[in-house]
Image 1 (cartoon, one colour):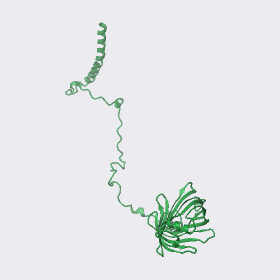
Image 2 (cartoon, helix red, strand yellow):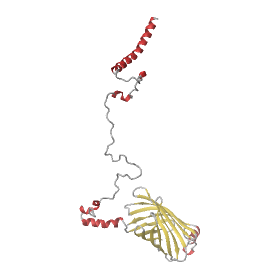
Image 3 (cartoon, helix red, strand yellow):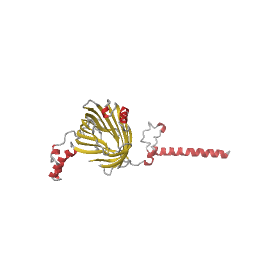
Length: 336
């Protein structure tokens, strides 16, 4: 019993000790100014709110003042979006800004050299004309039937908008007369990628009826870099025919290129003396693999399938020829 009473008294004493110490401390501080302090609002001795924890170690320290906004900040108070800032000068350049020489480079480089450079600039970077000769195909063919050769070439000369085109293609069996055609076209750009072409075409057939045609077509680069050339031909006899070609350069390496190619020919009417029926008269498709020794010169090998269709095929067979042929080809492609 005594032990329990002693333990309870000790616990009460420990609990009361801080209160007495706080009271004594309060009494000390309070007592120092007790004679001068106004106790009208001191009832209940309401304690002041504790200081923030992060300032506990800075009691009595003189805290540095917060940095003021630099007076020289040019963006202070600017409206960031919309509206012109009245602090930005809106006046035109001062007169002395244009007081220098007309050609400032002449003060550094020889005036004669700079004059020649200025004269060359519009010729090289502005409206200029250039000419290109391209041999797209010059090849030998072998397969079912007589072996032969063909060519397809063009020449273009002009500027960005207008050009003169000369196109020629032909074929023949080795040792036999050549069948050829030549086109003279005026080309006008109708967009960044395509030209509209118009002109005349002359056919040259050994021992056969020649034809002269009016030509209207388009040539250019279709999406995905397909080169497309299509034209309609109206002969002096009123015969309407057409042709469309498409080819694509699939680059395998920087110099090795596979070029698939397809060509289709049409006729609006049957022309027996030319061996043509109405509709799609023939189809050619193949692929050529070329190696560019130089960009301007590339030998190639390939394979091509030629097929006459419809009544044209029947006319071909009636003439003793094959309506369908598979050919191995080898040739060169060049331009300069």
